[in-house]
Length: 403
Image 1: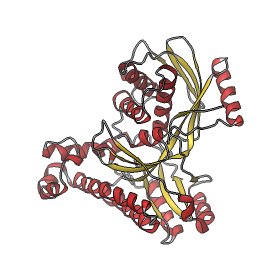
Image 2 (image 1 turned 45 degrees about the vertical axis):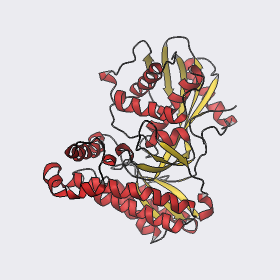
Image 3 (image 1 turned 45 degrees about the horizontal axis):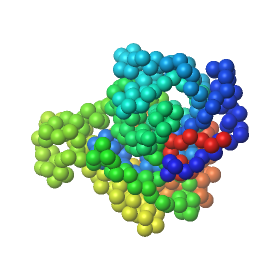
């Protein structure tokens, strides 16, 4: 969990110090880290107040930090333009939608609303959570900024689940993306967790202790090399269509609508909302029910059942949620190709599924160790060197690192 200590290695410290000096002409004083996350169960269930199974991974976003006394936040991310946010203005800015400054401003604004005296600081950031990787680089960044502000100016009094909510607020209200809360929570809290978002203001977070290494399988994330650019409306269409379903019942989210009541209304919903919306709702009910069964299988040490449930989730996402191929795409179906490659190289063993938001990004696979090298070689040959990442689960969430 997030209170586990994380030590900054000498090599990483040297790199962060050098980057900070180049960006700001000084030496940093403190260091912070927030991990990427992998979604293991519950695809697109969180924004409907559903259940998820997720884990922090050993790829992270790290920052070297120093208070600057200038009333502005300056963040230099490696390879990107300097982001500057003036703390005298903490309202959403139209010209910042879909930009990094929007996330920074949104996190700072929410802390200020909570009574935190947010002041200026400089940060140099390096990340192994590549943008578009499906490991949620945006959530890791939001959690990183929230963890920095929480420790620098608020004595750490905001809990890590609350830091996650602050990140979601920034992404929803300032950045302009209607995301759920799973990504931020998994990054903020750390380890493997199952989360029930039925009460979104007080999600139930349960740590799951399970040793994946003992199963003889590797957790792989496959980068399809597809771009998320111009796909914002594809992601938004999922929540938009489910919102139309909910409006028919006078509800806000599907979790508030009994499944039997939904099925009674399918004829009317098809006419009113369209078939894709109905199929996406069916996916929610099925995948939401799958999560506690997955958790029970892991607790019982029944990895075979767990793998079968992963496959079922993947099939549901492909057929019903339809977040594998963007609307109208024919020449480029990167995620579909990656899934087909997984099926070929696993040859009936392990499991695989679309990972995270879908449409672009990544595929997740549980690969038997005796197949791993062959699997990775085949994936890399088809999608490009380094497309297949072998990961481990990180116990720490968003933390200040020890030097």
